[in-house]
Image (cartoon, rainbow, N blue to C red; front, side, top):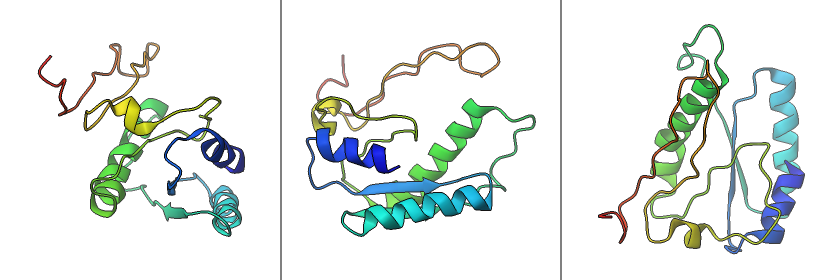
Length: 142
């Protein structure tokens, strides 16, 4: 988490960002490690940790990482981002994603309300098609 935050500080064009960490770790020990990292970073920077108990929402059996990721993201958008950050430019990044070059969320959105990078999942993970681009910006009619 510290390395990810360092990359955001070094490369993110939007200098006044808040790092919102959705802590959905599968066990108490890992949850605590994530909480400690949030507190360390939060001593100097704007960090908000949201501990998510999603056990009632995660009904998939057997475990499917792609579906769980989608369920966690849906929960985070509905319960945290929409009510607490209306009108903010938001970047949703996974814990294993790091900025390594200059990046602007607002430039990437290019006038849209939402944008993404198409992803392909192997068989067994559900989605076989790239994820669509969504948005309501100047180019939405294209």
